[in-house]
Structures are given as structure tokens and as C-alpha cells.
Amino acid sequence: DWTMDAYRDEAIRLIRDQVSDKKVICGLSGGVDSSVAAVLIHEAIGDQLTCVFVDHGLLRQNEADEVVTMFRDHYNIPLIHADEAELFLGELDGVSDPETKRKIIGRLFIDVFQKYASDIEGAEFLAQGTLYPDVIESVSFSGGPSVTIKSHHNVGGLPEKMGLKLVEPLRELFKDEVRALGRELGLPDSFIGRHPFPGPGLAIRCPGEITREKLAILRKADAVFIDQIRKHGLYDDIWQAFVAILPVRTVGVMGDGRTYDFACALRAVTSVDGMTADYYPFSHDFLGETATRIINEVRGINRVTYDVTSKPPGTIEWE
Ligand code: XMP
Image 1 (cartoon, rainbow, N blue to C red):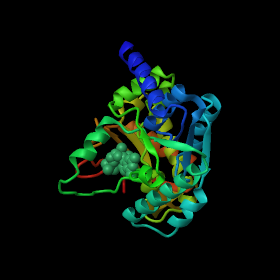
Image 2: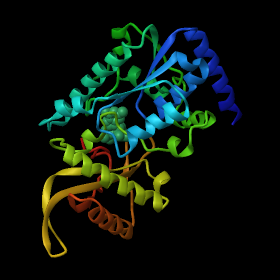
Image 3: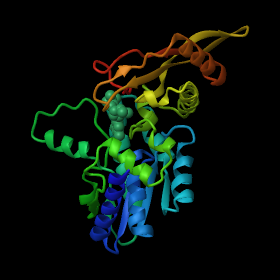
Image 4: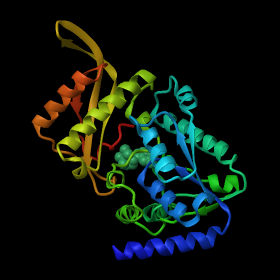
């Protein structure tokens, strides 16, 4: 695609002009936006870039390893893996209110990022994968009546606090253009096409108190659901799909025994931008097969439900 090719060269030139020989820190989440920003900036300035990957212990199965392998080992981008699961899960212990969870995670995220970033000597810039819709949204909402449904988790205010200047090479792009740029930069299609994943991670897919036991069960169930979706060739037709583990145990039978395990909900939606969404019309066969697989393969779950709420009135995530 010649336009993306030209865009990439121009973006690289602009990054070099802006940064010169200074150091840049990039917060890597494992998502598409921050990943594309990191690879682009690395092409422009090489090892003047260091990425900080804050691992809050609320990622999906194998996700942290995949991020580290791809960036550190495959792209040779200097990467600090801030493995702070203990800290986050400790502070979240006993917390069940959704907004409180988000605030704790958001605050710790900034603290942790700042702690690791301040170890990178002489850094003058902070890179962010801000997209054009983020730019417009922050403008159009300022001054207007503010209605917060869910507090979003980002690093707003951090650059000023740390005395860093911003590098935002994706500011003029829409999501599909970021994906095209990512392909241009050689990121694998499987990675570029991944469903969005929220900053607070599995915390908001575990309504009620978060425990390590529930997280472990959730990760396994989620992996089976996504595997089913891929096997049936549905992944690219769906905007987002995941499992939520419910804060309730229910009675079941297995073999000749009674079980008393967690119930879970499957969630899958189609959407254009995440603002509105419709539940995905899986066939009954697919749902039945998936429920059977989850109950057989995941110890700790004995009941599977499918969430058929669209947005509005529901939200995509459960919290
Ligand atoms: P809801 O649940 O509000 O989600 O319908 C809409 C989209 O936003 C994602 N989401 C988040 N993304 N930080 C993020 O980066 C957050 O705090 C957050 N909360 C929700 C959600 O996964 C969906 O794609």
C-alpha cells in the first residue's frame, strides 16, 4: 500500500526531527496501538527507545510472555518487563466495587510506570499510541457536561508530572490505518487483527472480589472460548469476545458426583467503534459445544451462560 509506505517514511522523519539524539520511553500494553507506535519509533531511533511493559497480573493466558517474546526477542527493542502482579493483586484484595477497582489499577499503573521510567537515565520523551479519535474525543468532551459511565484508564497527566515531552506518531490515524501501518512495519496479521483488550484487564471481567483462583479459572475458560471462535473461523467477524467469571457458585452433576463450582458468562459482540454493539448470533451448536468444552476442560466451572445484551443498554465489559 503506497500511501502507508509514504506515511511511514514521513512519520520516521518527523520522529527523528523531534527526538534528535535524546531518549524516549514508551509504555507498552501489548495492544495494537502502543505496539505499532513502539515498532515505528524503534525504526526511527533504534535503541534510544526503551519500552516499559507494566504487567499488572490481570492479563490473559500467555499474554505477558507473548509481549516479551515479540518485542525483546523478535524486534530486539529494549524492554523492561515490570512484573508487578503481587502489588496490584494485593491492593485489589477484597475490593469488589467496579469504580474502586479501576481507580486502584489506574493509580498503581501510573506509580509503577513512573518508578520504572525514572530508572531510564536521561529520557526526555514519552511515546504514546494516541489515535485521532482519542484526540477528537478529548477535545469534544472538554467543557461539556461530563457523564462518566466508567473511568478510563490511561496515563493522562503523567508527561507533565515527569517533565517529559510527548511523542505521538499515530495522532492523525484511525484504527484501520494503524493496522495498515502495523502490517507495513511487519507486525504479524494475527497480532494486528487482535480484539481490543481493556487497560484494567481481567479485573473488569471478574465482577466481585478478584482472587488468584478466579483469575486462573477465567484465563483457562477464556482461552477455550477464543480457541473455539478461531476454530470456527469467526474471530475476524467479532469485535470482541471474552469470558467473565461470575461471583456465584452453582450446583451441577459430573459423573456420579455433585459439583459446586463457578458459573461463567460468554460475551461476544460486533461493533464498529465500541460505542454501540450487538451480541454475536452464534449458532446453538456452537454455544453447546463451547459450554461442553469449557466444563470438561476447565476445573472450577460447571455452568456456562451466554450474554445476549446489546450496547446500549449493556456495556461490552461487565464492569
Ligand atoms: P464498554 O465496556 O464501556 O467498553 O462498553 C467499550 C470498549 O472500551 C474498552 N474498555 C477499556 N479500554 N481502558 C481501555 O483501554 C479501560 O478502562 C476500558 N474500559 C473498557 C472495552 O474493552 C471495549 O472495547
